[in-house]
Length: 344
Image (cartoon, rainbow, N blue to C red; front, side):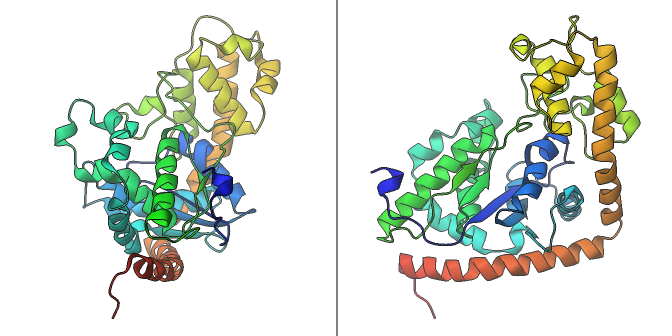
């Protein structure tokens, strides 16, 4: 049966997404997600979460977890996510996430989970040493989305497989418990330009918070001189900037820098190459560093202001958690009825 033939979900259109509070956020997080989240506020009811439950699946650090959650929330707000228009909260404050995860664990199948490539990528040769939580991460992600009956999820390439799993779990729950159309089958939102920002040192690897070298990424809090230094030292090659997108093929690091310029200035790669094609990187790199500093400096300043007042951030997160619970609790009450649990 195709999606068009399935009983359709009739509820409101709603966006859900979140980021882990691990290390600091970087340019890839901003261009690939946050910039898009801000725009989505004009089209949807949006729920943006700091996913601390996911963060403890690998190397938990309880001494810093709360402060890191605040820092990520500050980045959301500084980037333009408005707590008056969107819900911003910390995942663990809404316990319905974990309750629905257990129910979904009883719906998902081992064969589905064993096909999840991100676990294999993170575990490498050490699968047996990894936590069950890391293996089960995609089921928690499905619960994150569906505990709010979210209909749309902005995802990058590395999360598309997990969103497909969320759709499979939603459909199997609806079928298993004879509840047609109970959960929506969440749709991906296309990220557009800048969705995949790569390492400044290796154009084949995604820019990452976990990379041991700070020179591989532009942090959202980097000062202008740090941005200039990192871009100046970013890997390129001996050829000039190409004149066409076709000529970017086989030049991963150059394509990454051109893509960063395009996404930061909200232009096309073609437009950037029309300006810089044939010129040397001695001219291109300073121009790129300048536009990055102009974009990130006001955000970094606002992040510093917000982080200096943790009580105010906590008040925003508490209000967001209350709003999130107000959505999740009645949905979970319905889930319990559908599953057949005893209720007092």
